[in-house]
Length: 121
Image (cartoon, rainbow, N blue to C red; front, top):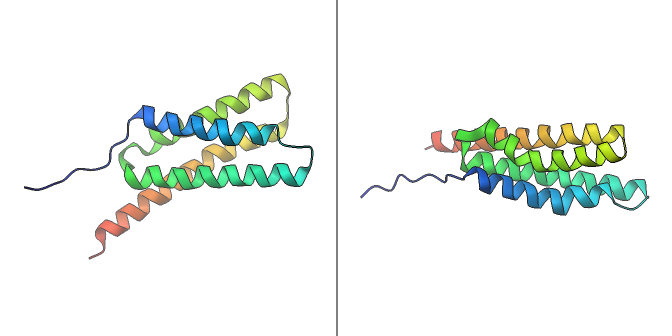
């Protein structure tokens, strides 16, 4: 018997992981200490996690690339948008774009890795 199963994740899985990452990563990075270095390190680590987890989603389920990346980055962007409405900070806009861009690039990288690994003998 052949086993041709592929890892398929639902939208709830993707949104759930994005929510956990935004709650445990984005939220503390917004309210990090007043030290600029501490805040930048926290934001850099959060963006690194978005890139890495986006790559994992792209590697395991390349069919839902754009939809998955939008769903994955949406909780963090929504949280930052709420903070932006309360206290406008231009850097939050850059942070929102970076979250979406890095999760998309990670997903694209994971998708390409899966494509090239399958082609190799």
